[in-house]
Length: 389
Image (cartoon, rainbow, N blue to C red):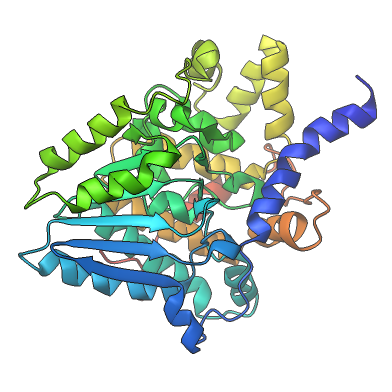
């Protein structure tokens, strides 16, 4: 393989990532124009609530206005003794939610704006609400589910994937980290799968989203409307009733071929090679392995932000013993340090704005990222800026 082919294989994942992220551009995060009211559709049908993310042209990317509409409604429904279920879904046929409003956040961060503080804080409070919700919460992750979309789904009781689902946490490619509770759920996927997904941004699709543990169920896309109807027809349901309906629809989803988990042939390698306590050890393990698969992972890691990879690995390693609440508080500190540092802006520039797919990370090497710098990321914020849950 020549140099041209090598470069193409190296940059192709970031080009695809840029296409997805580019849909998330939002120009008026605080606008109160009437059309903003339609970005989230809220319905109450008998004792059930339906939340529809309604920005299909932007792949239902999450912005602050949407968060501020969803959170109070979920709180109200939770406190209503008659409510029995909430369904979260995305409009259109491409995406559940492809991520968050990161361009607006970085634009705000450059000028010390409030959005760079409020967005992460209110998003994480919503993530915690979903993770502690007292009535059954069902996310239809039909289509692209990344970043903010992961936070709106993975902490809930039930997550239903389809053959159109594309799940990924690609934040290390833009100088961020797998937030929205990634430090809590990724280490609980088993073995080192969560570390692998977080560092490489690997995309899981279709049934593999369920086989990995990210989704609780798989239902083929053409049955989703019938599934919703069946759930809405449940009378006074308890979680077991919801589970029975989902189990039935999953068992009937036989038109989509059921294959082995796509990463099953590599799980031994993932658990062994990504078992290093430091990113340097993981890189060394991959270099020593020398297989084509290991070389591919090395090429991917070499494109990612060294700072992002180091804070990501520490977040996941330590997340094994943290509660969701503790994890989100740590993640909020990390988010604000990303705003104060350099790589987040550079990653957004390279992938979303200039689209040259050649970020200039600072530091540019793993060795250049000191323990003191990583410790600073995890250090407490001033008391009045900490996330309170």
